Length: 90
Image (cartoon, rainbow, N blue to C red):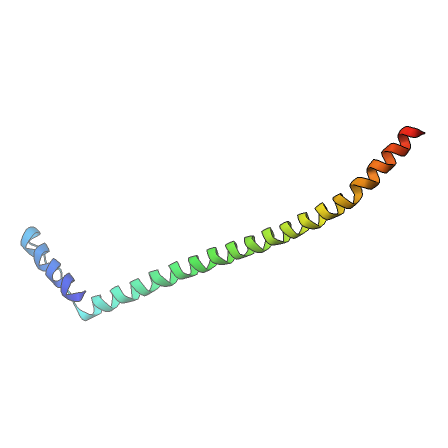
């Protein structure tokens, strides 16, 4: 990578007649910047994964609640029909 930057600096000098110096310090700064950028992206991705995991847990809880309510509703339908028939007879 450092060699590629060096080659580009030569091209830059030839085309624009300006110098760009590649030093070990500039290379270390590049590595530090890249490391910081990667760390930020990892943190962002971890937060997104955490959000999705929480969402999946909530969806699973909701599905369980719906199944429980549906079972209760199936038990109550015959009772409601019976009470409606009794009310109609009276």
